[in-house]
Length: 127
Image (tube, rainbow, N blue to C red; front, side, top):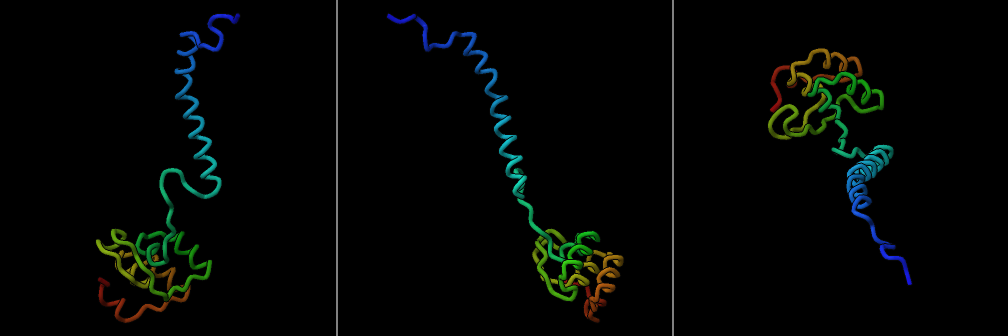
């Protein structure tokens, strides 16, 4: 009636299909990662934006300037995640964070943008 072996894979064909499987999976994963990245979702780690105080604590002058250009208040008090400046999370002004990180050039950027350092922040390290 029918031919024997129709619908069955030969051993050689099955071996080739098995060998191609990792490449197909890698291609599918790559397409998925690229699609996620195109929509702003990083495939390996989440990205969290920095507050102005965190940027000052991390000595990131470029991020400080970018945040100030978007209208962030240089005198505001913003949270700093634990491990950025101290072991535990804290809430500091950007000037206090820059002083705690010993970065006078960041303080200068903030003061030029309108930050007013308080007498307390200039004499006592924040904790």
